[in-house]
Image (cartoon, rainbow, N blue to C red; front, side, top):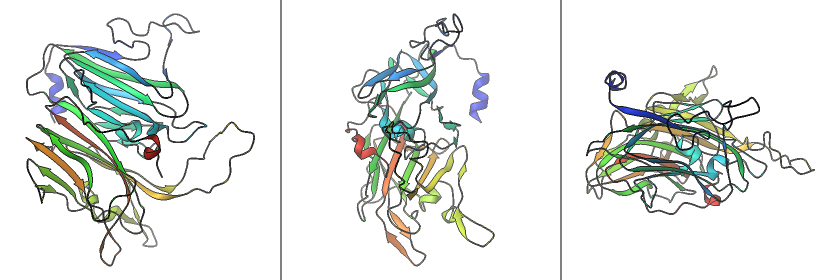
Length: 372
């Protein structure tokens, strides 16, 4: 694999890292801050994120390449259980106004629904407990800026992060910029395809999909096809999948059977395809403290069925030269026939483009991002 052969070829670069202890990534300036243990003994492991503010966690002058991002934060407070949907990750290239990356923090790392789950894939890894890692390469020619906006109704006292990057002498003219865009429809429209991204302009490669689907109807939810409209396609796409589970590399509704012959869906994580999360249980009131004298009411723990899946097109990128639209049908199967569905669908689309600017679309409000 190229990932193994590339490391044997020397390329002149300078390795750097941005952390709370070295927020500029300056050479020879890491691990300087003192603590009660003494000088240069883990003086600052995290930063606060004030409620209602967008905090810059990295500002880098290029040319350079982001190699790895690691982040973690508590996933709930006494004001709510969906911190991972309340924090918005943004990345801006070359001083552009619109971010190329804009997504709730959890969803970007394939942790939708405000819930943590482990993910073991090539570009995205989530390790116990809530250690978010991205290995997507993100080159830039002049500048990169990474921010976190805290829309949770409480200041977050401890956000931990490390941004590993390389400064290089130059990048080729064909270098593309990384993009990621989160979208959601709380109730999809009957017989109308859900759109992950619409009318992307320029040239590039579509490289990944994260799907966070909450079922609002009974029975099997995964008959819909992913459809890729490329470079002028109108009525019909150039590329499609056989079904939803087929797109994510599975088959036959991911079924395995217990000793009594009862089917259930099996989760899996592989380098390029995965189904790391499914649940119909509400865990939001576990270890939940309101700070009030009265005890938390017992609401029960039933929840709507939720499913989180990823696919990385790193070995099979979807190339576009002028424009790209990506849709997903909402079609189910009740063991008698196919039927049109309406569900709660959220996605992150990942792509590389020759264009550094992001999509000019408004961020959904905190209320519109809350999981069901």
